[in-house]
Length: 110
Image (cartoon, rainbow, N blue to C red):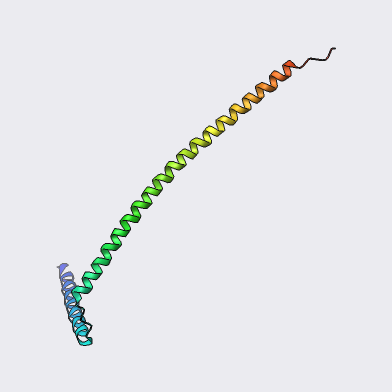
């Protein structure tokens, strides 16, 4: 019989919600606002739907930006790798030039 408290809680919540809805409608009518609860609910639904749409657009834009950033980082890594290889090749070439210049220099007579 563990379901009895759950059923009682659900029925109580339903009653309180119904009373709250009735009271709100009555107060709105008394004040003369003329806005029905259904209109308020529809407006809230529209706001929620527009929020969801905006979230989806922003999420898609963020994912696109993250993908582009990842591609740029890959390109940057490749560029750094190529630059390092060019520096090594330049150092090797300069070393070879120095070796050739040393060999070409005439040695002083002994």
